[in-house]
Image 1 (cartoon, rainbow, N blue to C red):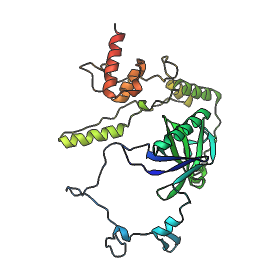
Image 2 (image 1 turned 30 degrees about the vertical axis):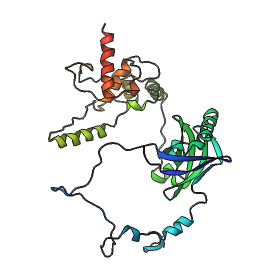
Image 3 (image 1 turned 90 degrees about the horizontal axis):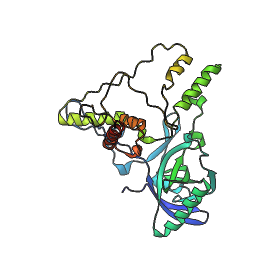
Image 4 (image 1 turned 180 degrees about the vertical axis):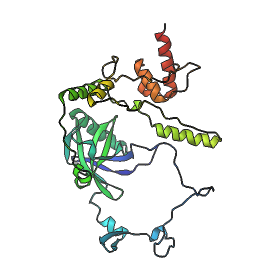
Length: 325
């Protein structure tokens, strides 16, 4: 179990629901620290006075805000910041309910799971979950997290309530704020039809198990190899260069799959340069989870999205053996 990032009350009309918020996401993989080259000495960062170069104790650090161009600041004491927090900063009041999917993903910042704070909160918690789920709505409120106030959406997700913080309107950039306007182009009817056909042919249902953090996996392998005193080398896949395919239309035509596939799942392109033995074969080189997922998709292995790499390898091997009988 992990520690909650917020504990307070969610107001459903006049019904109070005590909740705890837990971060729904976690970065994985090795944590890289800094060292002085040629030594085992870690690089540490300390608070120093930029004028004297002397270290400053944490209790002597206060915050300040710039008020002018000439390094003019005002100092803000902790009690002054505490004083201006919104009233009821430990309370989220849902004042509006929005249709499911009404908020564009661009607005989402972070997502948390919400749990009932105590036994007495279980019934109103479940009541709110059921009401939102049945009406396909989400509640809008605000919340104060880590000295900042955010808009927040409360919605049913994976059997629990989730709370997703949003950006404020003045924090979301318009495209023109960061880039030059995109020039308009006259689209040919044939090319547009080919583009639409390619999108339809490669359309699938979202399955996060089909994606893999390949860099994170190789980084872990590199760290383990160096810890064992062995060498790790990585040869990038050569999926074929872009080459000269002529017009956009011809490139789209060459991109279309050449064999039928099941509805709702994209075909998996075969690698033209490497022939691998099937999973389970003693002569087969070790395949990545993504490669095994692709093969499992071709073989229509049930439950593949929930399998780990070893389970996928075993399931693919069984499916291949069964197809040869």
